[in-house]
Amino acid sequence: MLEMLEGVLLSLSFVAATLVWFRAEADLFLTYQHGFAKIALVAGVFMMSLYYLDLYEPSAFQSRRELFVRLLQALGVGILVLALVYYIYPDARLGREVFLSGLALLLPTFAFWRNLFFGALRKLQTASRAAILGDSSLANELANAMRARPDVGIRLLGYVEHSAVGSSGLRYLGTPDELPEIVRREKLRQVIVAMGDRRDRLPVEQLLNLKASGTVVRDGNDLFEAVTGKIPLESLRLSWLLFSPGFRPSKFTLIYKRIFSVVLGALGLLVTLPLMFIIGFIIRIDSPGPIIFRQLRVGKGGKTFFLYKFRSMNHSADADQAYQPAHPDDKRFTRVGRWLRRTRLDELPQLYNILRGDMHFIGPRPFVPEQEEHFAADIPFYSYRWSVTPGATGWAQVNGGYCSTREDNIQKLAYDLFYIKNLSLGLDFLIILKTIKILLLTRGAV
Image (cartoon, rainbow, N blue to C red; front, side):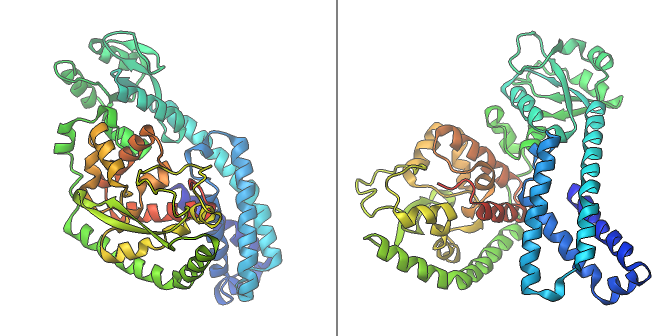
């Protein structure tokens, strides 16, 4: 919603600049000289710059100074991109006077708008006063998530539990028996249920009465998902997995994912084939060994397949057959291989895996059997990652980055289960946008 509003704001700034410069002839320029299309191009480029400079990430709402710096950076990147576009397509130019006037109008307008948005968030936070019912690990995770996401618009005032010994850092408000009085005293709008063990402890009747009187009662697991984009593993129960509406993709979704993967894989292979020949030649002259590296990975249902990549390490790097995760200062990388890993061009041969059906374009990342077996035995629910076809990119990759430790893999699982539960066309499209952003900015690579 914020993106749409700011897209309109960007367009209106340049429309206003057009009206100032062309006056009575503005309609002629906008209608018959493709003015609207030229403005749409400018707005689109600046919107992409805002997105790729993280102006829509939660951190952008925490500091006005950082927001202003990022805004200037985004405008600078947008100007450079438009300069390149105008050099290639001169007819797309908006006109120097209109463009500069639009920029001069856009900067203070956008800064004022974001200030206004900050103010609205503060009011929303004041209005959405909330308390957590429980002091479980989920309650602690929720408290941390809310501190990191002021844009959510929920202000946590404290927690309600039988004892005042809490570790969430929130203020103790009272016991569950006092919940109706706490809601009245603190003027709560929401009660978030995050009790570890709800049997014989959940004040069901009181919660129903509060809900009937207008207080919003929310499940902590659902809220944690919505805020963080991952499943709360520490509080995950088998009953939740059993009765959850997710984890059951429709036939339409499965057909779409296969068609989408084949089409995108074929197009990608066609476009990158000349580049792949060049990369292969450079690898050949850079170091001895094969151009293509293949490695056994775990796919859907726990079945294994060979994944293909450009070789980025010395040929004898894993001669002992023991899997060793890569790290930034890894001595095994070749000169060309380090660059290939940083740009992720080493993964281009995986397009062949996608066409073969070993992988989809989007899905949980496949890993080697030794690593998967180890984590499946060590981390609860880990094997549920194998319930769908793996992918070249996925929700865990665009949010969590490279996995090298046990904690990294727990976070990866939390993101992967969220993706499997909420698998949809819209989520796949979001992953593609985030993947392009990561590739362009070379983030998270090793």
